[in-house]
Every structure is written in C-alpha cells, then in structure tokens.
Image (cartoon, rainbow, N blue to C red; front, side, top):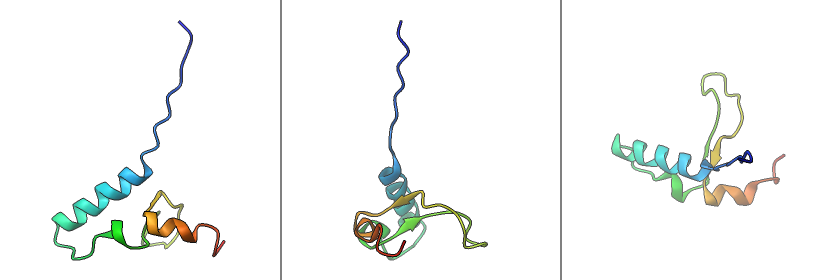
Length: 64
C-alpha cells in the first residue's frame, strides 16, 4: 500500500475550544468574536501564534 500523509489544520478549532473553556469558567467576552490570538508563554510574553480568530486574520501582515 502506498503511504499517505493526512494533515488536519485545527487552528480555528483550537481557538474555539479555548473560547468555550474560558466562557465555561466565567469569562464575559467570547474571544471568537474579537481580534484574538492563542500564543506562547504569557509570563515571558514570547512565542508563536498558534491560532487566531477570524477578525484577527485581517491584521495578518499589518504589523509584521
């Protein structure tokens, strides 16, 4: 059998799962509806962007 590689992009799902968890834990703002990102280490304020909301995508190269 020929080897096949399957890539599944769940970045938007990751942001949605995080948003639901935050709402479940009492947050008042749904980060799916505002420009928001899920990124690296908060204490160091460094890292890569793992996921971003649809409204954050319009800023993609604006500040790079």
